[in-house]
Length: 80
Image (tube, rainbow, N blue to C red; front, side, top):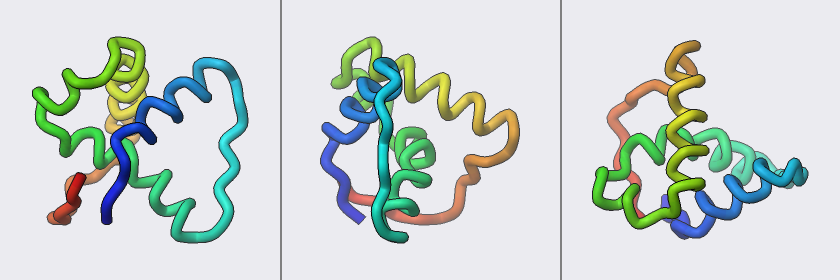
């Protein structure tokens, strides 16, 4: 799976501005569902390349999901 890094920024901006994100198709839905897990897989150096707002959004999102055990750590390899 390959995801453009800009998608993390765009989603954070959309959510901050209360804009809707509409996924069409199962592949898109599964990709969006995987983004918190993928964020956790990024190295700290990779995460630092994003704006403070984007990092904050994804850190809070993954923390919330981890509290509810929604973000698991399956042995998957993703390329960026």
